[in-house]
Image 1: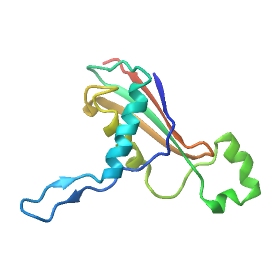
Image 2 (image 1 turned 90 degrees about the vertical axis):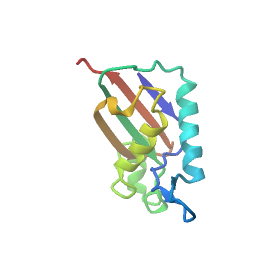
Image 3 (image 1 turned 90 degrees about the horizontal axis):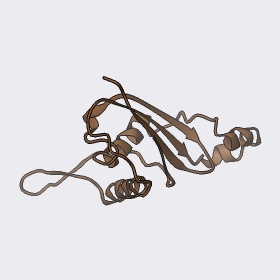
Length: 138
């Protein structure tokens, strides 16, 4: 099953903590909004939740390139073909964590089911995230 989320990928932010009374962790509002948007886009594609068993998930993050890459004429073809890998921060695992948290309970019952995972960051003029998920035979 393949799902496309047509919004700019966003890495998982670090948790914040309250400073009053008992210390509690919370997530920033923009991160919550991003996860809600991801969940909305996936749910609009009518997913079939994998209730049990291991799953394999592949996520490709298409990230808008910075100006210094856009200004290099020799990179334009690679950008069009979406073959230019991102080798800068944020880390792929931070992007991956945000996506798997957002689709937890939608594509699979629990993220503990993820047995095989793959994440790729690619520069693109069309920012988006593509998720492929499949059931694995036990």
